[in-house]
Image 1 (cartoon, rainbow, N blue to C red):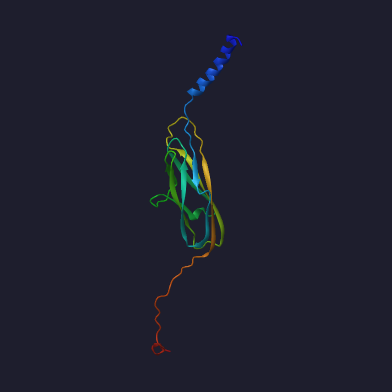
Image 2: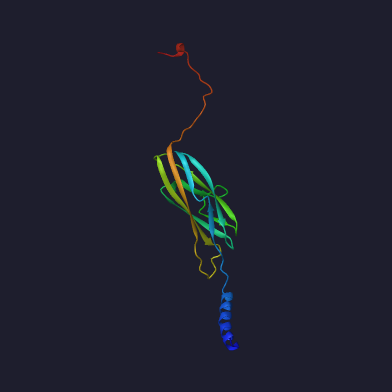
Length: 170
């Protein structure tokens, strides 16, 4: 190989490497959730239940994660923050995790059966002043609610008073 030929190979390679190094650093954004599915077995009419989901961030920066609930059981579900308030988005710290409660309220008029819903968690950038376009990443958690009958309230009788036959007017 002549020195002249090697120089022609070196110049394009160096310019490609310099061009890649000159690109702006893009933030790595991601979201994860656990558990990967939620099932409310044998839910009763009028019953309330809570379960917790973990929302995991794998980003180089803090991320806002928005929630959307769809499906036939969606009106029965609500996401609650750490103070018990209804939320539709959650701040996940950089490479960290946050939690939210999923509250179920089965209506009194719900028929027996299996109802489905899904909770979609989607990332949104916290700093929207950037000129770079970002891709929204979403995770879907399927939810199943199995309504199995009326709520049963149990109790224990502690005292019984019976009137005597003589006191009862016939």
